[in-house]
Amino acid sequence: MPQTTAIYLYCVVRAVRQLSLTRVPAGLGGATRPQATRVTAGLSLIHADVPLDIYGPSRLEPRLADLAWIADVAVAHESVVEHFARMQAATVVPMKLFTMFSSLDKAIADVRGRRAAVNRALRHIAGCEEWGIRVSRAVAPASLPTVAERTSKRSPRREQSGVAFLVARRDARDAARAARVEALTAADASFTRLQKLARDARRRDRGTEPGSNPPLLEASFLVPTASRTKFQAEARRQAAACAAAGADMTLTGPWPAYNFVGDAGDRT
Image (cartoon, rainbow, N blue to C red):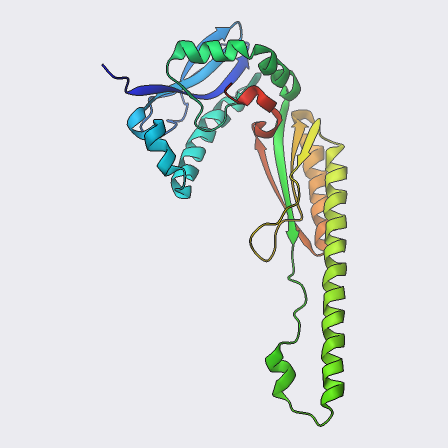
């Protein structure tokens, strides 16, 4: 009889006490309720059965372009991970979206085979939570005179009018460049100061993004829970500094340490 389900992994959890599944979220659509299976002493897999007619390779591949569906799956995945991350004295290594195995035995064997990486990740993130910041320009660069504006008023001194337009364009370009440099400087200073309160920090490389106002900074911080209040206070100070420099800072979190588990969250 052909196989109709696969094992879906949400996360690996290290906890001294037995994990309670009483209020665990439902998880992915079409999946069974999340379950916990002990791998080693104190280490458990959180998993569920998922139907292959939804999550099998031939069905999944075409749906990867459906961003709304992917977002719904990601929210369902994260709700399960975050449920266990909120448990007292529990450390969670999140698995990547769509981490699946043909059987529970293979899932257990895979995690056991990567135990060194999993243990490194657990030590690194223990007692911490992830916070994120995003800094973007608050005000669009100064607008330049349009061709219509330049030619709407005919003047006998057209040569001087043309010179004035070129000067205005240069000044606007210089002002926009100076404003961006000021905002970038504030964003970089924010990262430096917040990094001092974190065990680890990662910043996304600046690249070309669609839109007229790409982010100046996107960063994640691994913050000890004992430092949460200090980190939030410093984030407020840096948000004010960014605002003074013409930039908006958005703070998100706390989250499970998605960006700090390395290859422990990958399937080999």
